[in-house]
Image (cartoon, rainbow, N blue to C red; front, side, top):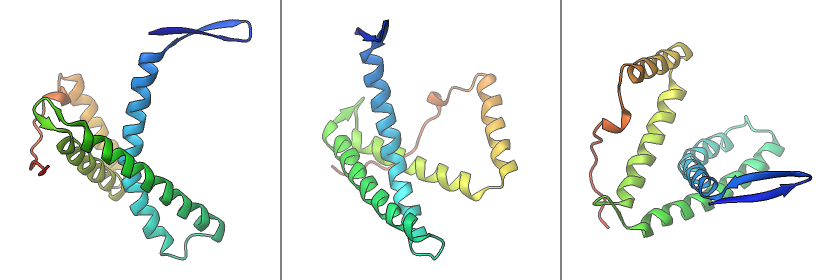
Length: 142
């Protein structure tokens, strides 16, 4: 649905369906990244590397992320099935992939990260469609 909004003397077309979809995608990204952020932040809070002001904000960040994590998880828990797969399975698979990707990219040397990104880019140019790669998982009990 396109809505026209006025800003000053200009009319701006605003696609609300696209905006809603993008907002949901971004919320999903934040939901999965929040788990990782809390873990990293908690480890950093245990060190003397944080200055006092940053420690204070770090604790607030962890609290905000934990709220997002709870809400994000519940939305998957309550969604039900998607193409014969319970949405919690999708949550678990995706959360694990985010965790593995974060670990992969933070434990590698910069040249290795560049190499893997080049490998992915070249593979996609040669016709690799990431949607065609089967993902193994153990179904969660709901």
